[in-house]
Image (cartoon, rainbow, N blue to C red; front, side):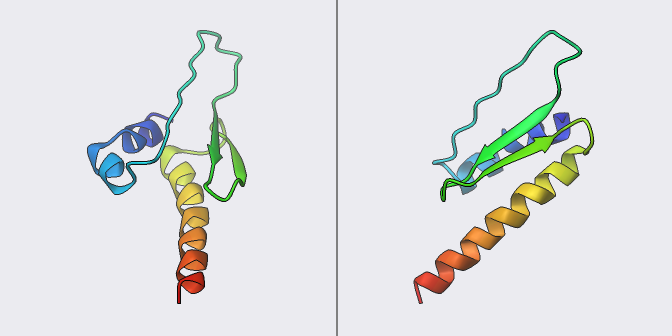
Length: 78
């Protein structure tokens, strides 16, 4: 999870998508699941269980859908 958060809050990421909004909720309870919830600009929501995936895997899932959206936008604008 720390790998994912480190990349999300990097200066490079902020510069690439300045409209991206990030909310982080933390808890002190160990029993609470580590989850990532992403809402894309098309309204689709992705819920990722951080207990089962490593940071790079979470990033890959988010990037996969993000790339799909970019391709759809490119096709619309042609």
